[in-house]
Image (tube, rainbow, N blue to C red; front, side, top):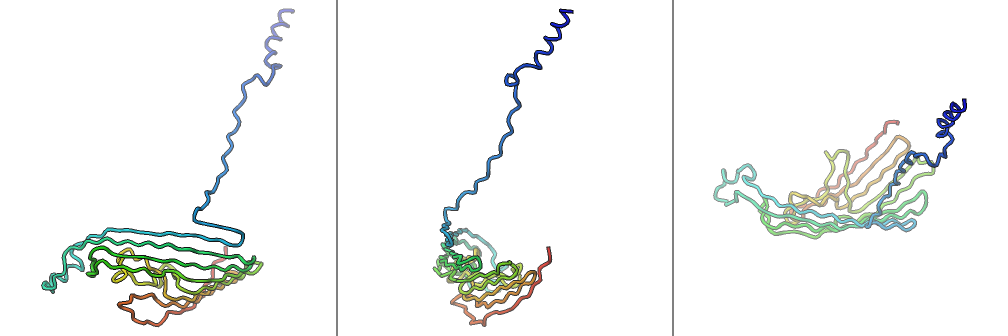
Length: 236
């Protein structure tokens, strides 16, 4: 009986052992909190928000048999070249700013310059030309009521404007020819705009006045485009 008691004691010893000596399960790995990197081109101080932007592009173009070879077929004496090589590029520095005057009112605006040019001769026989133009220069004001159901956004000046899926209204400026950069087409802003957006719950009303920024060499003096669009958003 004495040996039986000692044998039971030996089997029971691991149960009474110090738990700190036993192997512990590894602690769950804590996910590192995501840290959003700061934007070096953005400055925010209270109600003021400044954003610097820099856009640039460069492209080499080569082509043969331009305009389906019609010049060589119907006007062989014009000496229109069969092959074309040119390099086009642009650079656009800009600045946008907004000022939150209150919870309801926010004023905003932007300005940008664009330099574009072509080195070589493009399909329209334009050689080594380019311009530095004002691309953006606009001001706007946003207002919304405390409930968030009603809002107004009005702006005007030299700025881009796109309607819908770009099928009817998109680029407001001419590119190529004396402005260079024929295929990249960096100029998009309209020469003058007046845009108003009004929304109430699921109904929005949008009106615009647009004057195209045409090429100096082919300015048609076209009358402005204007329209009012009413849209009802689907309830979510």
